[in-house]
Image: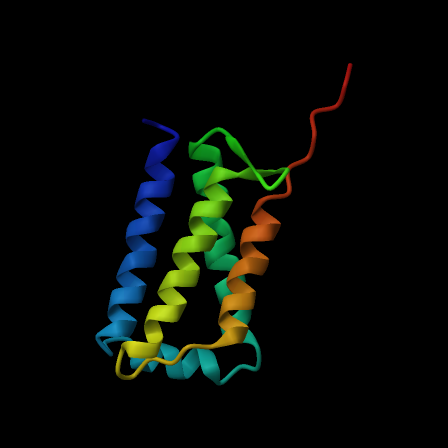
Length: 121
């Protein structure tokens, strides 16, 4: 339970931000973020990367084999969900699909997937 609490609380925060953006309630924040070049992309990578990291920790770095690759389940889940969320913006008034946001999301997921191997004693 203890390892799931940080992920659950952070997921609630991320969902609140997405819903706020979808409903047009955080336009002031979006405008502020877009005033700084590339800040939006940096935030995407950071927030989504942290989400993937917390899920990987909650899942104890569980892996699944796909096409001969050992992929972290948490990173895969977050990557798929954020891809679907970004694509959903095509149909939401006031939102726009952005390849740059999608790339930043996956950059965060990939960075969260790097784990230092334990040193052999």
